[in-house]
Amino acid sequence: MKLTPVTIGDLTLEVPIIQGGMGIGVSLSRLAGSVAKNGGMGIISCAQIGFNDPLFERAPFKANMKAIKDQYEMAKTIAGNGIVGFNIMCATFKYEKYVQRCVEVGADVIISGAGLPIHLPELVAGSKTKIAPIVSSEKAAKVLLRTWAKRYTRTADFLVIEGPEAGGHLGFKYDGIENAIANMDEEVKKIIAVAKEYGKKFQCEIPVFFAGGVYDRADIDHYLELGCAGVQMATRFVVTEECDAPSDYKQRYLNAKKEDVKIIKSPVGMPGRAIENKFTETIKTKQIPIAKCRSCLSYDHCDRKTIPYCITEMLLNSVTENPDCGLVFAGSNVFKVNEMTTVPALMKELSE
Image (cartoon, rainbow, N blue to C red; front, side, top):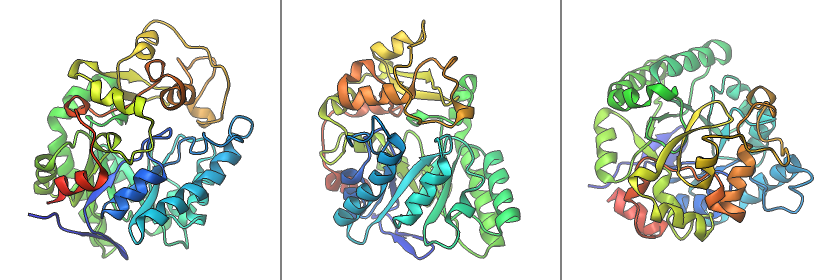
């Protein structure tokens, strides 16, 4: 049975699958545009989005502002009428400027996590851009939607629940991940109830999408049965021909074994899930000196004297120099991925 389209305000998501934002340089225009063209929601990562621009090394912020427009326009050219948006971490340096730039170029949606995007509604006010926070608990959903309702008299256009089996940054404590995995289904139901409460208050539907460890159609059907409108997936999209990451990066996914997937500490202040390599072994015992600051994190998230490594440097290593000496984020089920595919083939596999 085909998946049912989802309405998000005045947008229609033909296939209720969001391609998760992956940075640096993993989900850019080609991947996001291709997913959107095939009925899903294509998401471009704003994390150092302008890293390929010659301007980046001397003026990273300017390069990123320019790249937001360039990448979005290229993605929309591919997508046609499909939905394309951005993922922006709350911990990003000059977060507000990134949001405003994405609105300025006409983004269909903005998904924001790695912290609670408390001020997001005021940053998109008066625009058509839809907004969705990433939450990992009922408590976070309640706090955020209550604050938005009280301060801005509005609510989320949709919600993304990120579970403990996701790749990248996780909204859980290091010692609470296993317990969260065991209890996530109940937490999902509670968050959906919060979304329904605020949807009723604002006389609208707030679709909820689950992310984290979603691998196949059986997983999608499971979260639909729990009450979700759809899912967000990232890991599966890395090993597509259209993914913007280089072939060496994709090969890390294809080679990964279950025991290679590890939880690491991130300078953002959250645990993260990544594929084990020389980099992850190194940070177990020593700090990696910062070669150059490229202003990726806000000051309250980055103390150059104490952070174990520069997250921009390590993510750049993964997509530009040596993925074995860089940070390669991946979801818990990356070890199941064993062959390359295409976005059309994957979307058909998951939706029909």
